[in-house]
Picture 1 (cartoon, rainbow, N blue to C red):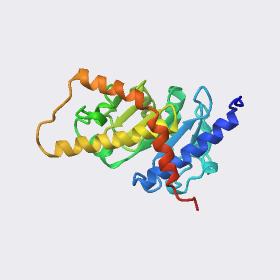
Picture 2 (cartoon, rainbow, N blue to C red; picture 1 turned 60 degrees about the vertical axis):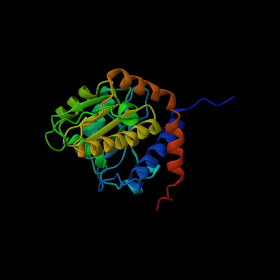
Picture 3 (tube, helix red, strand yellow; picture 1 turned 120 degrees about the vertical axis):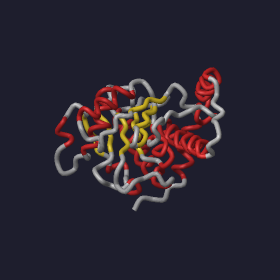
Picture 4 (cartoon, rainbow, N blue to C red; picture 1 turned 180 degrees about the vertical axis):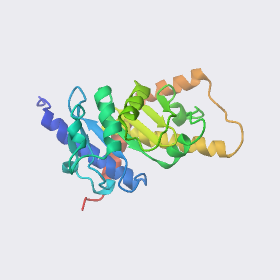
Length: 244
């Protein structure tokens, strides 16, 4: 009989998964200097969460480096080891407002960011990967510079709501998921979907857009393939070099 999972076991697993997600992101060429942030809720109510330290490069983040913060404690954004203001604004607010957002990945992946910079950044369903996100994507087009104001975090959380992808206009993309592997798989496929859409638009030919019915059926059909996330994440993890 398996032993019950304790909070310590959960946190240990999350620390390893999240630190590997940072390093995989860098391996895929998606890190950006020492910016961008990933987080994962530890407590059932989502208030306690893990977050990368201020300005530590993705390639170097080990499980023990991750900060354990409480979204209800504003002092967490203060002190020498505090996260930067944009990290606290986005991740602190999302974990406080949306307890079902267990894992929150924010990145400026190239094609997703290019999509976010279009006047109409809608993820149009034109193939399997773009249709994966049909009905699951929210859009925030009120970019006002660095996301470091309280009202910005509140607006982003409100806009995200029960969706799993937030396209942040003129900025990038934020993905939420139940597990690190699930969220990372969506980050991976959203980048591929954005690449397909950007390339198709660059042809200047009309898009062959799927009907709402086919797009919804395709999005629903992806649910049966959820197990791909764990397998894919495990493979990517196996290719990582040792830290240090």
